[in-house]
Image 1 (cartoon, rainbow, N blue to C red):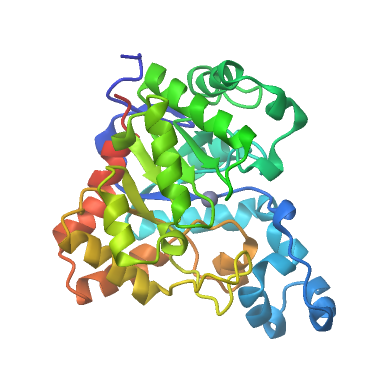
Image 2: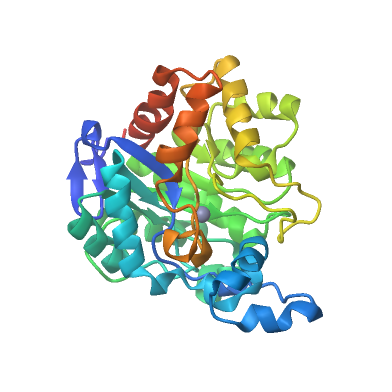
Length: 349
Ligand SMILES: [Zn+2]
């Protein structure tokens, strides 16, 4: 048992879990995503270099990773602050900020946003996908990586005294790389020491979440305190989803608001729309998993902010919850998904 036991650790310090309120469990408030830039088709090169305008906003919505400026969410602190205030006014309480090493985590900015808005912000420890690992990260042993993770939670991240409150999102590719495997093993070891919440970004293949849970289990992790993100784009088959749900981790539908014809990172995947996500969530509730479901938007680019015509961080509270109720989810189930489940997950053992 650590000194954090029974508490949630935000960027402003420890809080009682009951204070979190409605919680988005997978968001980014400041980060960069340049490493995921997708060169546009030759006929779209001019558009991809234009600044944001109404006449290109549809194109950017559908080709978000081909517009360089769109990948710099770290330039939007003012807009994000306004959105957090809006989120709070709509009944929101907390945001888990999943930005890890490799995509420009900035805990100072997170602290400032928390102070200025009163929204609880929980920051993520650890490393994003292999493509962002530095040579130093790759060279570390599992023990050294474990030490980094434990330090970010007990002492502070990026040379500050601002502490992380979860491990993740831990980035995994498909196929999983050697460096990612070490980070997963370190994640399990750090979790054994600290009893902390863990959140994983799986590779884009339905076998990836299964492989990750197996690996974490073998390394001693507590699967009941682990979240598998991005299930919306990862496990599309219902039977396979139920098989995965039995493993006992949290099941996260965190791409609410993303509705695209072509998913730029995988032509093989037909990204579901929000109605499909709601139906999936209802299906899992009907199958008895309402205590395991979490939801979020995973905002990581500018175009999803309201300032640029996007849905913003309040989309779930203002648009998705009413539709969930209309489609037969009970208020009780919605409260579990937005309040009780995040609270249980985020509390240190
Ligand atoms: Zn994310």
